[in-house]
Image 1 (cartoon, rainbow, N blue to C red):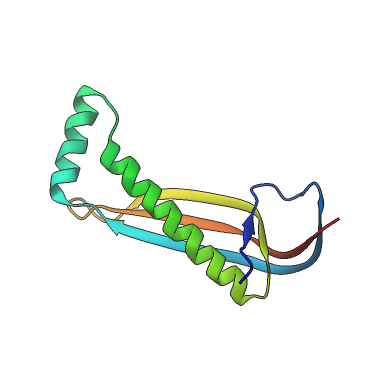
Image 2 (image 1 turned 180 degrees about the vertical axis):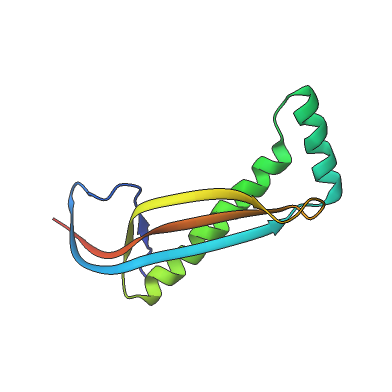
Length: 112
């Protein structure tokens, strides 16, 4: 199975876009646990990086990109151009959820 190529730019050097298949989107949502939320609030107060949040965001990004590849392949495309990934904190206080949202245009490309 051919791998899906993903590009953040809409114009590709060395490739020709032969067909546009439309918008592709994917989401990944993860719940944060109470302990991680408390430690993050502590770090917010005193400063410093939150490795636990960074790790969760890395996992969210990988999950969203994997789902985007599946949906791109389902459309008959072999690439995504114009990729954008956005992160958001959703849910109410005490029920913290992080979401990654990936979107781009599914296309068929070939080398020039």
